Image 1: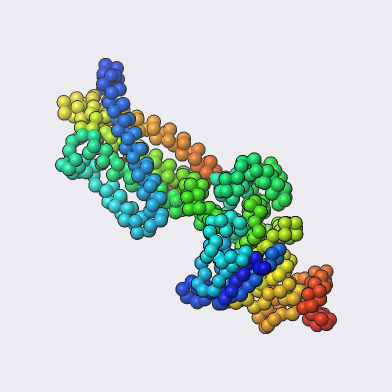
Image 2: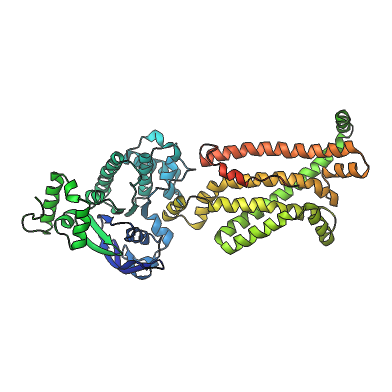
Length: 272
Length: 229
């Protein structure tokens, strides 16, 4: 059973539709990267899941239950949420930020402390940072706190809206590696919005490529590159010089993966 | 002249002490009521834009009425005494309190609000754990303005029989006794200044504690108005 299910979901903000009858099924343990240019509806899709944005028609199920049947506060506490500029609480220490959802649920203080310590280790922050305030942290450290904060309640689903957009490239690479490792370790379901093709390909077990409110193609990174569904996908990946950016290792890995999934049956025609 | 004022303080210390206690008492009641009312109204205004506009207009309008005129009007409605004085002081004090509460709350970074809401805060938790603490320095700045204003206005309240240090001023004027007028005025000024200095320390602490390094948020200083008398 799908953890998240979208059926013919539409959404408009007055002028023009942002989502035009969108279907999507997300299975447990998937790392979905939502890729597309700004305005394509990827952030809207993400924020419908935790009820931050209401949709117009169609239906959305989370954990097999219609979104409208959920108590929205309960649902949100079970979904990790990392937004673009992180939005750490400036009047709380790093530890308090991380344990925020636990404190909302009135968990015992010792449990909050333990959990915060564990998550500091997990996201690679030294524990002596715990009593510090967000303003004392660097950009990359803030993102790490943001990730740790989203993981605190051990959510089944984690929503991330371009979380690594505001850090330098080296830090971003590091954070991506760590995010991948965290996903492999925790095996939760992640939806990750990005407009960066490389990031989407690197992190996603499945990439959802969106354009003007519709999904153009969804598949493994290999499938998208080797078997683009239409001209848009070809152009989108091609225009960004994606293939040129890949190292050979990555390509052959994707190729094997695609073969395994029977996405392709013959030799790669597109390369060389 | 200064010597004679000091002599007056010495000779009539019981009298001045009694007036000071009355003054502090009036101030305390007024500040208490204004704080509660201002917070409640300020919070309610963030939920209702229409109400926000209306209340801000109304309190600004009240603020432009000279205090003597307002006292005069109130005396004809609610009579002479403490009640009229309190009503007038409260009406004036509401503006800085309401406006700073409202401004402080709506100026909280929307990113922070979104994160808190998306993580499953109830509306009450959002208000108590995120919005109010982050708005506290701004709210406190309005509180400080209001307290100093209330102390100063308390001096005039004595003219309609509310008691307090203003009585010394009034007695000085009506008996043509300048030293008495100055002695009363000085005590009110001293009361206001010392209170303001103490509140300033608290405000500085709140700023560094809740907003980070001091001085980074000078713009909120705009809400700290000049004292009206």
